[in-house]
Amino acid sequence: PTESEGKQELDRFCDTLINIKSEIMDNDGALIPMLKNAPHTESEITANEWNNSYTREQAAFPLPYIRENKFWPSVARVDNALGDRNLICSCNPIEDYMES
Image 1 (cartoon, one colour):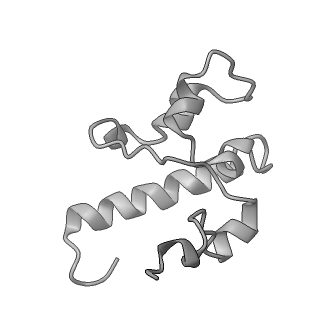
Image 2 (cartoon, one colour):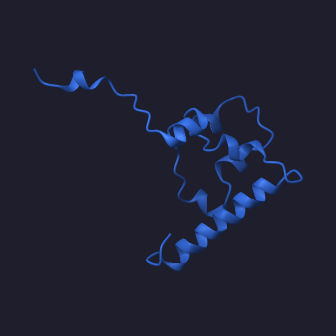
């Protein structure tokens, strides 16, 4: 956020950082899998099986205000750090779009 953001948005940003820190410090300082597995897609949250050590509720709505304006990501992480650092395109080759 910048100085152009309103107080409400800055408060939300701070709440998010505080929540992330509490997730990191959970389990006697060990990083819990919820952060590592984020973001959780709608299909993951609503799947029949849930094999995580945290609840679906914690994964889907880590902060109360998220319930009202939840954005459901279409995919989870793409190959961990590789996907975070690189744009991975799943489009057809550019030649398929070129006109003859």
